[in-house]
Length: 95
Image (cartoon, rainbow, N blue to C red; front, side, top):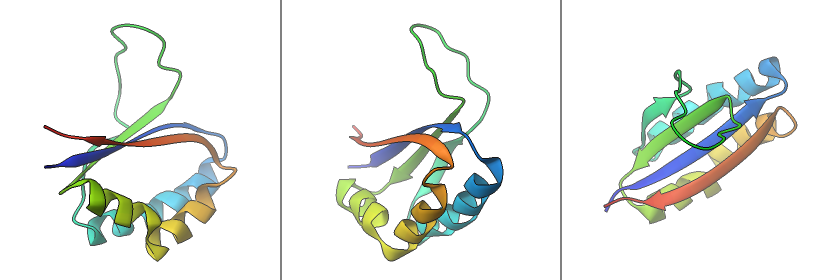
């Protein structure tokens, strides 16, 4: 069953965040992920969505998504993101 990592982001330091993005993409690919949404324009239909950037990545299953997050490649990328963005991430199991 597919799983999705959803990240909701407000960037505080664009230069530092760019270093994260350069590393996170290859880490996603290594774990059989594909980006479905990567910061495109959004239209809020209801409620308050206080994030300027939303990213959705599809993984084969929850365990693969967890392996991606805990992988040395992603954890290295994550170091570049810390302090560069207000960042929230969740894994959601698909149907």
